[in-house]
Length: 480
Image (cartoon, rainbow, N blue to C red; front, top):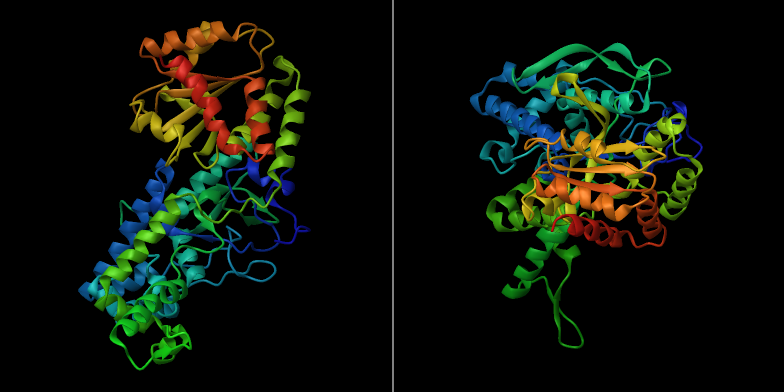
């Protein structure tokens, strides 16, 4: 990305780095070469991603069923609203985004491609992302576009939440249709979105985008198919075997590829005859995704960001006059510290029909670590995690604990944080948190300035992994 480009955060004066934002901080006057990866969505455990995956699965099955039934008009209708989305600013467009819609002719072309695909008819392709492996004309850019269109409604809702979070102005605008999982059809509507020079913007969670989406027919071919054929030819002693001067026998991948080139038809034929190789490829993608080794869009200096956040925290005095400044800063700090385990922050989320509010509310998307073990090992529900921000000059006492614990539930979760400035008697407060926990009212974890600065200093020193130990020490002191 050109560092001279104006970013969304600059345009709306958010004063946040990418590391402090849950969404991709897109350039407003061009595209960023990132793609929504439906496979990444399928592997997430947070509620928002699970909803997205359900819609994607329903859509794909709906289209495939119509194709297999020979319902040409129904299938084309299902494919006819797949425009190239301008609103996300993701993809390969040059200069100012100018998406081209998928009209009836293009929908018929896409239908013909899917109809003629043996991989689709036989069920070898089981998801939208796998179309990249075996269906000609469908690449990662097109799959990202298809995904955007299908989950557009959830992206609208996500954008609304982020705009509420940062007080970004929105306007009611007409938008391309989204796929309704209830109606199994496309639905039109007006939506409240931020505008940049008159154009609507859809924000995308950074957890679901990749520079290189998982499914890649080239990598599958070269790293799995050719490896298999290389071993097979060597074992069979085929004409492709070469004997080196040292007596070692080898088969060169380039010789195999000359006879069996990397085409999607060849990939289908091989996968049909060797489903175990395709299964190993799928398993490897799952392993890589679940290990957290996904593309990192955070090209920022974490050490420098950590120092800036510590300085900003120390510069805000406690008290009511600066409460909003402290709350806004904590939005960025908790995103920076807890991503990718906690996601999708919502400010002052209403619960109990609006009778109670939570300062910051995040979804639990952890696949390891403390936020994973709360439910899996400690048997404490933790689908959502609230943060209450108290910029008090005095100590926090029982009323604040009761306020947060009163917002816990089995469905939402029973783990939360109180962010505050300092404790005159931290040991006493921990005892109060222990009493709350032992009474079955939930686990409340204190995050005062000293703890937050300690967590940030670990990140500054390249020791982010040590933050788990700091938090676990406090948790274990409470949960006894």
